[in-house]
Every structure is written in structure tokens, then in C-alpha cells.
Length: 237
Image 1 (cartoon, rainbow, N blue to C red):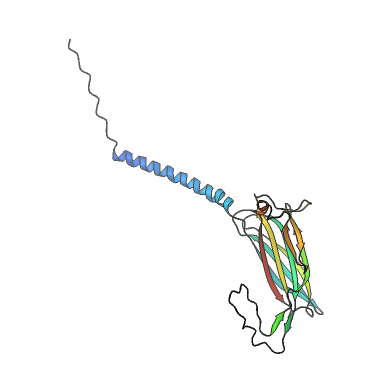
Image 2 (cartoon, rainbow, N blue to C red):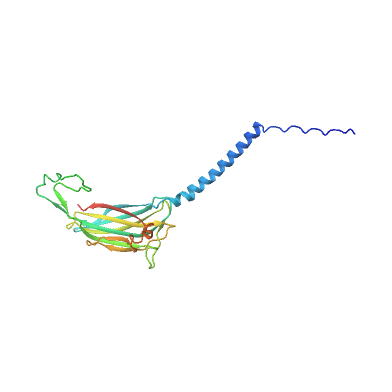
């Protein structure tokens, strides 16, 4: 019995260049979008979380007045978050030290003739010496929230944020030729656990911040802690 043969199916059309080009463009757009999202998340969230905290300290000193032999000095201390992550200020210490200069009648011609081989620090002046370490005129310290179990105010800084503090210091110029202002800050990243601190004074009365924990025995507890120190000097002449 004869029958009609089924019609042959048309041959499949090859994957044309136009379709390939469209697919490539689509994948490129999707890839660029995914990369943009990743870059935004990385720059906004991931990268800042990996950055260490960074706080700068500057001190501006100006003469505020004088009475008899006493000079009033206004100190403006500014702490600024110069990093990319929030920081938690834990402690602040402020020392003002008076230093006397002693002048020789005849400058020592050999003042600079010291052997420099292997030296790690050089200090020499022709015609005078400084009465180091000096005398502490004023010292102040404060522990912020997280550094002490006592009730304390918080001091957090967002990236780019700054806080300034003014202080008046009085110095007797019959006793000192200049004063040295020293500031020390202790802080951690805002999302790191705080570190308990305490005050410590050396034999000259200079105040410092120290962790309550023994860092050699328990280094992990001290690892988040960072410090910034700054010093400047002001002549009383």
C-alpha cells in the first residue's frame, strides 16, 4: 500500500553571529553589574572593616596673657579620625612639663665631637644644656566608656570626625625657659572589644595610660589597642 511520505523537517539554523554577539553583550552587562555591586560592597563595607583605626592629634599653643612672671598658655588639642573605620577613644592623657635651659659662659668646642658609630639617638647643643626630664606643671587624664568599669562618657569618632578641647596652663618663666606639651591617646576600632585601662605615673610624675591586663601573659586582650602620641613645645621668652 502506498502512502505519502512525511515532509522532511527543515534543517536547524546555525547559531548565528548576531545571536552570539547578543549573548556576549548580555553576559558583559550582567558581569559589569555584578562587579559594580561587589565593588560597592567592598569599598563601603568590606574594606573599611579591614582597615586599622587611625587617629591623629594636633595641639595649637598661643599666649593667652601674663601676670608678673607667669604666662598663661591656651592649648587647643584636636583629635581626628583619619582612618576609614569608626574608632572608640578609650583614654586621654595630657602632661605639661617645664624645662630649664642652662647656658655655659664658654661654649664647649667639642660638643659635637662624639662618636656616632652604632648610635641610635643623638642629642647635643652648643653652649647650653637642658634640665631634662623637666618638672611636671600639669597633668590630666580621663578614661572613657569601655576603658573603666566606672560610669564614664563615651567618645567615639566616625571617619573624618574631629573633637577639640581647650586648656589653660600657667607657667613661671623665672623657673622654666619653655614648656613641653605631651598628649597620648588610646583607642580601638569601634567594632572591636574595648580594652580596660589604668593610669600609671613614672618617678618624675609623668602620667601614662596602661592596659589593666598583663599584655605579655595575655597578648590577645591587648591586640585591639592602638595609641597615638604627640608632643610640642612653647617658649616662655
